[in-house]
Length: 323
Ligand code: ADP
Image (cartoon, rainbow, N blue to C red; front, side, top):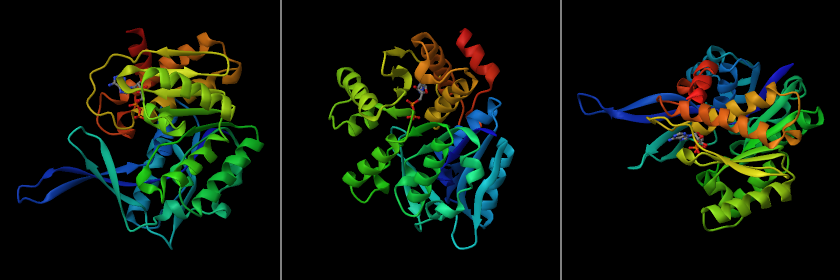
């Protein structure tokens, strides 16, 4: 039995890294994919995890499999395909450090995961199942994702979902919304950014009054157990059917915010797995403590470069919480 299984995109990100002495642009190669980042955070905190996804049987795919193994994430749900190439994205950083992605030769292997390739021993053998919306944006991975979530739900797993808004992957915004909402319908625990919340609830503003109203709307219309709205250095707003509140961010000096949301989610889910009761039955105090722990996990990830390599240990999170 696994504590957590996640399914979704898994790719190579090429990030600009200066210029060589002879004037060639340099690229840093990093493993990319939010579901794996979340599992890496859980594995670092001591949870037993496994990943479901697809890469090419090529040097990049082999590298990505090695990354899983090195992070202590079981790789038996990872398909290495002869017929597809590992997905590769080129990351563009704007002046504010915001990232946009350009994909090479679509579709890559991760979008080609089929229902038949999803191992049911993993989807039915986990206490928690996590997914995002990128694998929902094209076929056949959309069908594979919905099938896996359904199997995990049927087996009694807690379902967690991070919509991970990526309009560049959608044919139209309308279709993107339909895809994202099909994820929300399956989930117990959902994490969104303020922008995602505004888009999902059709609001044009991301200010606090709209955030409060939007969070209530999302929780009630999708029957969510917990909605977490992460707000960077402003901390996290939470909403359940019974209560709502905020937890301030931990105070750190950020260096690189890549993967902070995934580190936050991993830390939150670690506490969910450690609890005797389901989040739907938690007192507000328990949720508050859990969000504070997750905020510390997210904050720590901003103090070092990268996503997987910036994750904090349990001791570091506890130390940051002690202040
Ligand atoms: P995402 O990476 O999904 O955009 P956020 O940037 O909101 O998510 O970060 C997730 C969580 O990480 C936040 O809710 C917060 O607790 C923590 N965090 C992010 N940036 C900072 C920061 N600059 N200082 C302290 N905590 C931060």
